Length: 92
Image (spheres, rainbow, N blue to C red):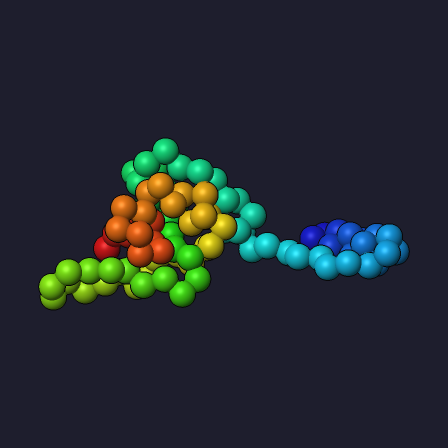
């Protein structure tokens, strides 16, 4: 059903003069602004980061690498990225 709907949208887009059709993934489509890290971590257990981000750490602490990469979600929640490393609410 989804592919049929997508084909119909694509056909209408092309018939209306072309253009670019961007299809977002589930994390990108559901970009929500969270109130705090507790709420964000209910959906994104290890945090959320923008593409290419790396968790900044001190000393011998290992960085979190299993956060969800979803730039649009991160962009709505930059207020939760205290160390400004591109990863919000990172958690082991």
